[in-house]
Length: 330
Image (cartoon, rainbow, N blue to C red; front, side):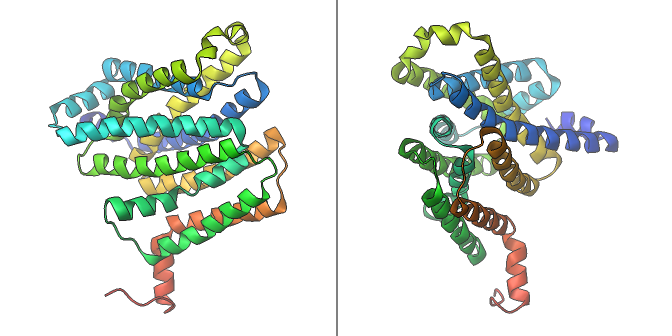
């Protein structure tokens, strides 16, 4: 993999071009995915969030098969991964991660079916809090006080959004909370595999995608069997075009996340995530015209502020120490 990427990066123009392409592509995929999914559930007689998630994972399996078999970069990554001695515990962790990955995405799509994106994104913004708690209890990791303080406006904002949400739905709300918790758990476990086991993100996606697809296909048969007898679904071309666009964005989002991290840094990806949240919510309000109360708007502002503080914890910590608000670390 390193030889392939060094070849791409050997020309400065290539680096600049790929950085622009990856960031632009990430924005398009990130903002489009949620809104396309919501459009399918709201404007089409389509009530199968698990089936849609299954198609997302099937698309990922197809992409991985093509990428790792037919491209130079893919073959290089696969060769490097095959040469590594992956421990048995890592293999079990990958299987566990695939289960968490499966349920978290399915819950996210279930939540999108019942909730508007403007509210859903605010619940998902609770992920840093869940990540801090899980990191503390599972990995015994301690963090600066600023990171703990940053979750206060996030919690207050989410509470205000929940109280002020005009189109509240308990099923969607519970699904979103579960998805948020599982996202945090996935982040913690994925961090262990990426750092301690030194597995790159694309290889991890490759190893997770097929087990996740099988799990979702089984769940579709059990929980959504009517999808196989839906005459409207199989005779409506426009719905399948939207589903194809959704699958394309789901796969593209994973690819662009890898590229953005490679050509910039994980910190840049966090900053882009902040901007993406604002853009996604704004575009959702324009497209779906859902009512938003003033309480929810203030809550959104609190969430965005808390998320920014969380991601800029080091700079905020330095500022507070420089102005003697916090004591200097020993």
